[in-house]
Length: 237
Image (cartoon, rainbow, N blue to C red; front, side, top):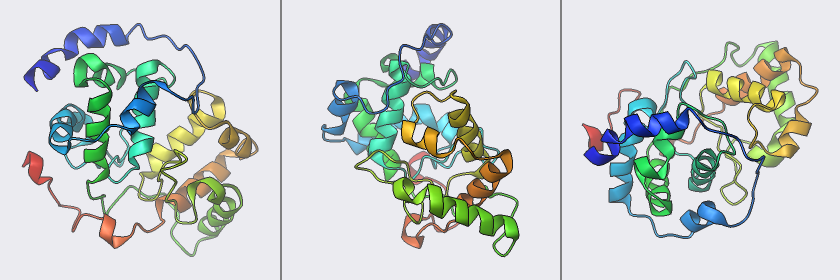
């Protein structure tokens, strides 16, 4: 682990010169497919996650201010895709790029390991939510927008699809989702599903906030949650 951490300074310099070669969504082959078909080693996944925990927290819960997303409970396939996209330059994330490189965490086996570890982490029972509670007109409109535009891919409960690489968005922080929504609409997040780009093109800024507010308030199944908001990951205790 120390070697990984000591390599960060040099790798960060590489990240400053990142270029963006393409707009991939689900290209076949490459590191993504390799990692998906490898048998994960959860013990090594825990070790690799030590690099990630500094930002995403040992529990994988991210931050309510939206700076870092909740990773805990996310589909392994989605996590692998996003890490591979960042490593390949298909998703711009200068902050995370140096920490995601093979020089920092390892190759395809490391992706397989760390994503399997993250997927098993219990989710935050107190994720960051939007401003409109159930019963308000804005909540109702957000639900209407979600059911009309989002259910087909993300599911009725925001559960996503591991098989189709659609992320689980239930339990995600409101401010993080809103920022990603805005980036997808503007084209800044270049690895977004083209179907979603088309689907949301007519959303107003208020529409964006209302639908994301609704998503942030979709209940997460109790079995997937940590016992309390004060839960501490015993692997890092």
